[in-house]
Image (cartoon, rainbow, N blue to C red; front, side):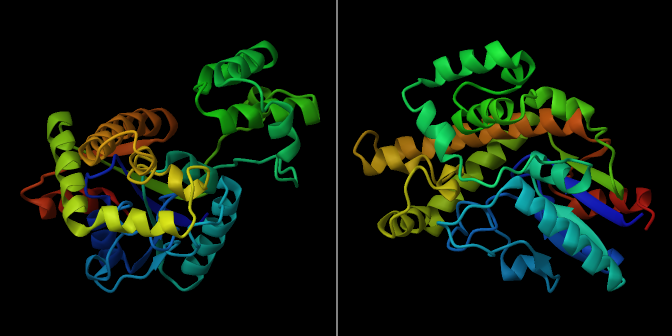
Length: 303
């Protein structure tokens, strides 16, 4: 069974730094577990690892797609599994670093996808006149368990659950229940955590730094290249908030406040996901002495 180290935790907690430190110690290569760092031209808003931060460590699954392209969880699963094998064959240790829980779980566990070879146009067209609430109510009538796990505003995933039922006759929740969700790798999950108020302050400071680094120009350039709300890349926090500004609905300060708010909310959801889905070894990050945190992790990892 191939060995993998996985560094997870909420945004702004120090995952990138920990991943590099572990890679240097264990002769590793980093695989990004972030669903948005795959996109080119989206450096500031995704807090993408810089060349300086890499410290010479190879990083995979970063800057591999143009911002108008789509990339599914299944695509990520196949890519990461191939990378793990290639890195292992080189005698190196794969280290997955990121905060997109579903992507990481799909890559490491026996997560199977009922891949329907279409662009979902038919299902979108069929239910185009349904509001999000009506669509969610319909899903509830055919697959109550899936409806419980999906927010009504997550229209794409609600439609996907309906589509699975209509094309297979099986509930999405039943299909998932049959999967054992066994980890396919000898994985050690490093979870990084800090006190919530400190985390939220760090998130706010990071967004302020993005403002100074030129986030507005980065997003504006993408907007004038023709990127729209509907593009997968533009659903990322730090980007989606700008469209109301471009349309004159909100002012610039509100954009940044919304980014901060959405980032804090996302951090809370990340904690919940990781605690419920993975066997995580949690470490309290020492902000003023990060080397101490690295040392604590190294004591526990056997590679």
